[in-house]
Image (cartoon, rainbow, N blue to C red; front, side, top):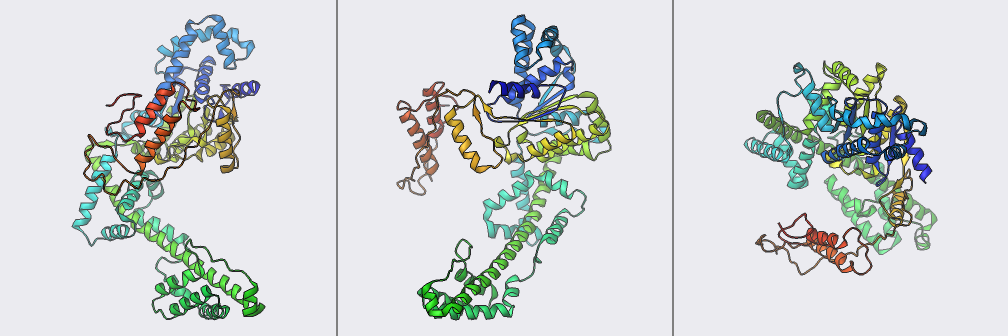
Length: 591
């Protein structure tokens, strides 16, 4: 295993080649990335030529702190210690003596080089790009950045609702009423808020259209198998062959004399007398389909053969399949029309809510993080200054390091890709080091797309000659935990490669907490007049949390190993889960 790790590190840390590493949890991704920075500096790169991007400001600060610590160590450590440091980072043995004086000088260079190394988040780097763009590009416009956009969206929603109340007959008001009637207030608001949060995708898709809503609806209509206005149920029942099949099917059900079949035949007879096509469809549907929308199972039986004969029973089965298929096809078309109506109403309302949101930001002179991404994308892809910005980036950065790439969203990747493609055209490719793990993508709510990891890997391998590497050895988890992870993911992902524990003798155990039933004693409305200062909140969530914490606490001295201050871990869990009116992030005490 040691040899395997050293071979991977040797390939990953070689500053002369780009590399893409898929590394599991606990495999030392941050160590690898900061080690790559050290190797790049040892190879002669200036700190100003290095761009390191991670996903959170905390991670960026930790990366900067670790780099500072290591370079300080190289400046003051003994020759023996420094040589071992270099060996651990796979500097070839024959080059270590020559690298020693350079290693000692790195800390001074790191502190004095201006501009220094860029260690930032995507948004932090984008803000730098916007601030350094030509004034004529209008990218920053002097707007200030707002961290919390939820309050602005709430304000936009209030303006949106007030406006529709003043114009109840408008097309948007009718669309909102349809959404509220069919999906309720909470789901409607969630849908429209999600639209605002994903506005960059909307802008990118519709930016060439003067009427974006109509443009998208035209695309949807072109992809549909049926017109949005066609009465597909009436069309189905207008087929004379279906009417004959239904009549014959009902006769065969009655002749079969099974109680359930006789009852279903009666339901079909009632449906035949229904004038309204939609109501007739509702009556016929449960005769042949289950509540989950699947065809009812019907097979040949000896009883059916005696009552209907072989030909009669086969005809019954044939008609059952024929009519069921017709119903399923119609249901698919109905669902397609419903999806269209949802998009028609949702896009109209979403576009109006987005307009209100953008108006509020303009009036306040603020932008949010999504605006930063969008303006950066425009600056580097479609603006008149894109080529100039590419030139500046090429002249500045020679090494790009990307951490936690599985949490990148499509627009962030498109911004980066625009620069990489431009650099490839002029044969000025930077070295790229990309590391992440698609299994650990947790920021889908921020539009992260874990499938981009494979897209980025393929692109860098094909266009930048990157080495494709995998690190599946975890130093964090015991073999028992790794075994559970392997068992779970082997069944979920066909391309999953099993993890290996580095510490094979580390003790560990996986416990599955029991299921808890809801406490029927807590009646509905019990919290209606609760004083939150002296009474805990009741309910299923708090019950489950209390019992989970109680189970952990009870088992702390009964065979449940809790490493690193187990008492504090249980106290923390109890504080976070028990329904106290005041909670603290600390291990003990209240706020």
